[in-house]
Image 1 (tube, helix red, strand yellow):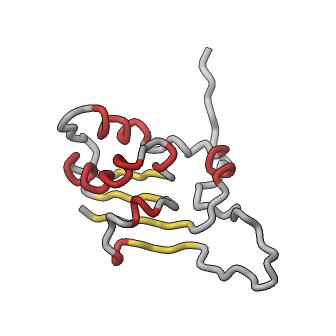
Image 2 (cartoon, helix red, strand yellow):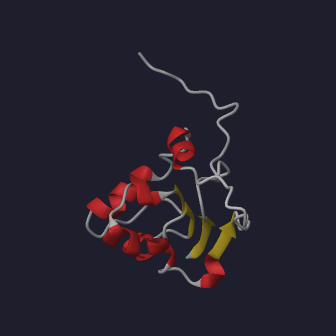
Length: 127
């Protein structure tokens, strides 16, 4: 399985929650942890901050569940150390590696959290 994990050190989770993409992969994630021996019909899986939905044990089992489910390529955007401890270092890409200023003035969260832009996205509301 090809695995890439993008790590954001100080994401603004309010930005994540406001994104229209925040549920991308949720259905597959739910199936992996609620259907015994789940096998996917998809080759690729992309998850944005899956730590919002999973408990600690599920976070630690996420990578092995992706493998067992039959994905060929998995991309995860996260800030969870529980996921990172289960991933080989060559699969990790760290984003926002800026230093915290020594004068102590910095934002607690960073707004650049890797969520796709909602600009130009058209949402159709049914009746």
